[in-house]
Amino acid sequence: MKLNSLLVTLALFTAALGFTATAPAADLKFEAQLIWGTSEGMPADSKLKPADAEVRKKLASLPLKWTHYYEVNRQSLAVAANQTKKSVLSDRCTVEVKRLGGDKIEVLLLGQGKEVGKVTQQLPRGEILVLAGNAPAENAWLVTLKRIQ
Amino acid sequence: MNDELQIKVQAFLDGELPEAEAREIGSLLARDADAAAMRAELKHTRAALVGFERRILVPETREFYFSKIQREIEREEASASAPARPQHSIFSFWRRALAVTGGVAALAVALLVVTNFGPRGAALEVALGSGEAFTYRNYESGATLVWLSYPAENGLAENQPAATLQ
Image (tube, rainbow over all chains, first blue to last red; front, side, top):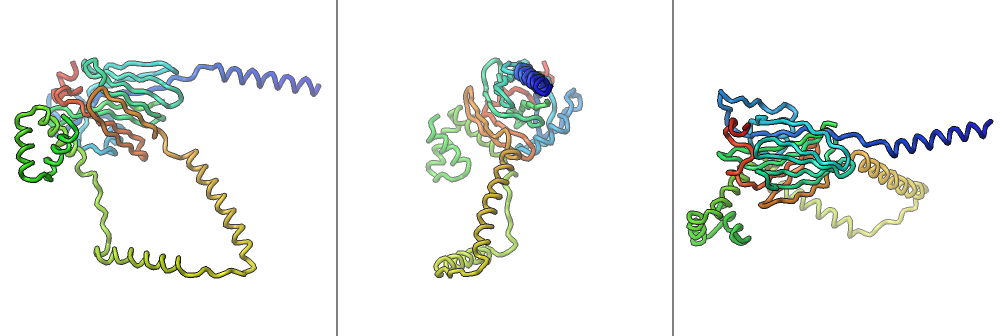
């Protein structure tokens, strides 16, 4: 009787182990935003809204001089293991996110269809990656990628 | 534009060039579009970083502050050169044992902290299509910045929101 119980337990443990090993890894969820940074106010007729408070707080922790950040576009991405997802943020700006394993991702930024830069890093949940550069009239463009889940 | 010229443009902006060389670079900036673009980029970068250099103020005069450092160095040198006194206390064995145990415990705690609470997402690699980049990471807020020297005129988000949204 004792031997039977032991064998059943062992079988269940082995089955559980096998299930865990073969279960598909959950998608990583990201939020990509195209943001316009400026130190001047927005024209009254603009339809842009201020970037969300959490993103603004993260941007404030970085050495950037701009005082206002406006959201141009926002896209959500769910990326499966070893997959790549593309997000078109404007007619000039596209971002591709590739999962490399674990929290590690590769982010490819395309400007007018050409590669601007590629960043590889671990992006744990809640962290944000910001790729940015100068825009005309001493303003800035920013592409933010926030790991949601 | 070669590296030497880039350094000279930077020195020109910082006002560090001798007069003759400054005139030469000033003239180059007036006629060379690449050099002018480089100067504009450097100005933007410098402006972006303004205000992020923290000044540390010491609540003493400069002379007194450095004299304290000098005294501390002299004190440490004097104690290092003094002959070590042999210790014959009955507690010396336990002190040594506790020191070893404490060291091992401290190492274990440090390992635990690094393993569980150490900086995450630190491994950052950047490859560029062209131009240059600098990176900055704020571990506390969990934010990483990659600043790209992508030409402003090709800006991905323009200052005309309507055009950007199209």
